Every structure is written in structure tokens, then in C-alpha cells.
Length: 569
Image (cartoon, rainbow, N blue to C red; front, side, top):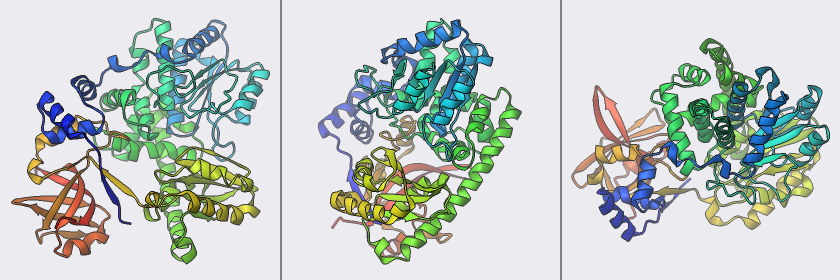
């Protein structure tokens, strides 16, 4: 599907002023201004992340209450249960909190609980509270969940169990009756940075606990590698405090990682030094696979293992789960695409709703995302779950998925989520009515622009501006992620030299000329653009800068993300 190209706005006056101030090429200052960096102090903080840029945890609403309650639990030798979600953010949060509590409290009084994805579902579960009651826990600390668990927190309270909630999801108007709620997004919280992931919020709590106990900083900094993995996997903005935590966490991962992380890196053959990209595409899927395909407890056990061999044993289980996940993901995606491709009505809809009772519940969200790559529109993939139908939904930028599900609520037994992703449960007899209603809602409310994928570039660049100095400075902008992506450039009016090749019927190796300069580029999975490349027409390309190393020689390479016929006359 053709993408719409959009250039980030950067005020030219500010671009020139910053270039002069920092003594850098205007191309660099244009990238920075486009990211809101407009003065020396902003640039210094951006290029030199350090611990001094982290905010005081006590500025987070209820942090003093949370610390006080935990210290009381330690003093009175109470039993504490750490309760977390089954994804990367949840399991890393549990591992971090569990290990710190075992250092400052009797380890026999500390336990953790991860709900089973298929039997209990997302968030604080009734089964989890029953477990806490049966085993006489006094305090539950929920991480990466709990902010919407009003009735279950009340149920625990009536059973004599206190709750501390560490969460980052948007709260409803009514909050649970917990002893303390740590969530920068809750009303009345003055914490300066609102975009922490669940593990980030848990990290602020252990920081405050260590400070209250006058413990050395290393007591909590040792867990920065877990925080970095959670930030990378949870796709939160790579700005402010998240960027600092990720920068420092990556440093630890590359120097002295947790046994579990080291085991996963070795098993997956991860090239070093690790980057955020390698965490997102190599480490995170293996951790997530535990909860998708089986029981996520083993991900926590891997993270908290105190020796490498034990961690490696759990890592092998995750590795196997991920192989199963990939096979299921690939097979179901093929089946789903075949359903759409073979049905003219489905192909021409503004939304996708597909159901197969035999599809694996753990991968339907991934499949929904895969379908959007080809059919760019709000997508729901459903499967059988006991007596009911359950599924996952994914949206396209600019379309509020949660609101559209709310409009279909008469056909749903339950639903939840946010702007871009959601889940739902419905009765089998309501699938067709729900599908029709969802299509009607999407058709009435989605803008035509939202059905066209958009590529946002940082700047238009001429080949003469591309060199290793530019690449070196771009490297200092890492870690990359949402709202701080690897800079994308556009170059216009390029000539194909006649040396370009189609590789393995899937990829393109291009040799492009602008004026008297020729650059090579690689375009993965873009065989569909080969006729355009061969046409002899001038080309416009969007790309990131990369290095190609061959026989010990390094050359700049363009990693091409899109190709169009040139619009220049």
C-alpha cells in the first residue's frame, strides 16, 4: 500500500540558531528542533543522559504512603505478595520488586503471582486474590496493573489485605481503595514525567525504599537492565526519564547483565553491543512468549535466578515458547490473509473482523498487527475461549479503538483497552452482529486519511550531506524509540545507475546517483517496487543511515524504507 510522506515541521529560524549555537550541520539541528530540542541545555541533557536527570521519587503522589506501608510490613514481619502482569513490563516489574524486597525483608515472607493469560486474563484476578487470602498475605503490591481493579481491591481489603498499586495505565474517574496508588497519570499527581512504564513506576518505588533505608544507590541501580527491557518492549515514548533509564540500562546490559538477560542474549545469538532495536525484536518476544503460549512465571524465575545455569534452563523454555509462538503466528496470519484475499466483501471493508475457533488465543493480537501491514485499517481477530469468543483489536494512528468498541457494547460481554489496542469477549451467537456494527461504526467515524499509512521524515537531505560524521552524531541520539526514532531522511530526484539487483525475489539492492555521487541502499521486502526501479524514472527515497561492512571495509549505506516515482519536474 502506498504511504503518504510527511516532513516533520522545524522552524527554520530555530534550526539556524541552534546550528550556530552547537556548531553542527543544519541537518542535525533540523532533527533536534523537530524533536523539541531548541537550546543548549536541552541539547546537553539529550546527548548526555545521566542519573542527575532522574526525578525525586517522593514527588510522586502517595509515594510516602507506599514506603511507610512497606516499612511497617517489614517491621511487623508481614507476608507480601508481588502481583504483576504476564507481559515483559509485568514480569520485569515483578522480578525487580521481588528481588529488592528479598534484600530488605525476610525472603520467606515474599512471594510473587503472575496470572495465567488464558485462565485468568489481564490484570488483578479473583484467583490471585483467593491465593493471597488462602496463604494469609497481609499486603499485595501490584505492578503494571491494578488501576482499574476497583472491586477486587475492595474484596481484598474486606479480607484484611492491603494493596499498593504501581501502574501506568490511564485511570478511570473512580480509583481503587488502595493504601497507596503510584501512577503519574492519576489526578493530582505532580510527578514531572508522565510516560513511565509499569517497571519504571516500580523502579521509583524501590528507589524511594532504598533512600528511606539509607542503602547505597547500587542496591536499586542493579535493576536498570530490567527497566530498559520493559521500556523497550512496552513501546512507551523514548523521551525524558524513559530515555535516561534506557540509556543507563543498556549500558548495564552490555557490561554486566542479569543472568536471565545474558542467557537469552546467548541463546538468541544477539549481536553486541545490544541496542533498543535488538531488545524489542529479540529479547522481548521471547519473554512475552512465555505468557502467550504457556505460563509467564518462568520468565520471572529466569530474571530472579541467582546463577547462570539455572537462568539458562528457564531461558531455554522461553526460547522454545517463542519458536511455538512464531509458528502459530505465521500459520494463523497466512490463514487470516487467505480469508480476506478470497472474499471481495472482506477486502473492501473499512475494518477487519475475523474469527476462527481454533486460532491460538496468545497470538491473535500479533496477527491483528500483521494484517494491518497489508490491510491498513482497524482490525479484530477472534477465537474460541471456553464457552465464549475472545479477541484482540489493533488500530491505525488517529482512530480511537476503545470508543468504537464502546459504541458496539450491546453485542459484547466485556471489553477494555485504549486508543490503539483493546480486547473483548462476546457470545458466539453475536459475532455477525458485532462484526456488522463494528464495520458501521468505523465507516461512519474514520477519516479517509487514517486509512492511508503515513511515513514521517525528519529532513530532506542531499547525498553530499551524508558522511560518517553525520552518522556518528546520529548514533549519539540513541536510544531510539517512539517520539525519538532513528532519523529518517528523504532524498529527491535520484537516478538508478543500472547496477541495482533483486535479491531472493524479496529484497532490493539499489545503486542510486544524485549529481555526481552514488550511494548503495538495501530495501528489505520491497520486491513490489522493482518495476518502478527498472522503469528509468527519477526516484524519491525515504531512508535511514546505516553502515555496510565487507572485507574489513566500512561504507555508508542507505536503509531504504520507501520508494516513489519522483514528484520533481
